[in-house]
Image 1 (tube, rainbow, N blue to C red):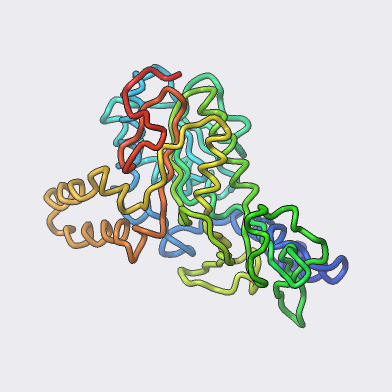
Image 2 (cartoon, helix red, strand yellow; image 1 turned 135 degrees about the vertical axis):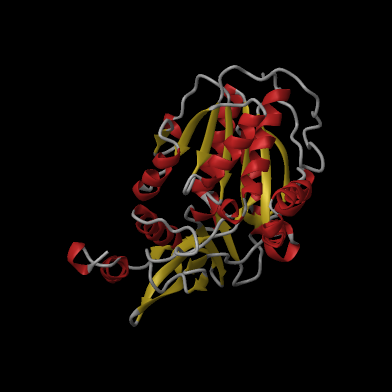
Length: 365
């Protein structure tokens, strides 16, 4: 955005902080990502980052087959909605729905997307889809089969830091021409679980109210409408401390505070917290698995072999793409897959154990 159309976001933040004082990390990240995603396609080699669906068709195909398997074992309800949160270019949806159709599943397509630029790209591939700015307008008349891939990580986080005077919100302040983090003035001890309040000075705890709100609404819809969902993102399966805020621009990590609105700001997802939220919302938590183990459990190695046999000249490329998705040192361990389902729906493939202890078939509740 040029200075002539209101100035860069960096300049606007400078004026705001100079006039009113430091702003919360959550405020900073929320404004920066809203500007970043509003009018650009950030994906692909010409963009800032590449997601799993862009790496290989195998990713979307296996997720689509997972949904189709859940649908079949839940009694194959006649009407069902495919819901994707943040569908990007529609690549994942194309691969998932193509694979699902071969298994007999042809759902109505619902996209939750706020970027006008990405909506235009999605319309080219899915002219019959329905778009939503958030989950509140999704239909309530049939079960949902939901995928959210690298959606939660871009939602703004709140950071709390332990100081000598207790817990404070982590703020973004001005220092000469740039931004730095500083502890706020207001005591925030009440926002920290009692078991974690005695952490050492300097400890940082992150929460993501937006992610919790999304998962709560997904869970409540699953409980009310039936269905299942997969949440895929990078993050941690057990609670941890420390700042995970990062920025990516042109496929390289950059300073999150250098050019707000010009880089993709993300933070790791706390999957343990999300599982708790989902269960409180009435959904069944099927488990959280490393992406590599999950995709192997769904048969990605056999799929790679089949693709390579059909296109021998691309065998090396197919093998490299599979390794990128499943290898522990690449996306296999850092990325997690969380499975959710409605009460009464079956357990899902790819998870080591159905933690609810219900893996049998049955009609949706």
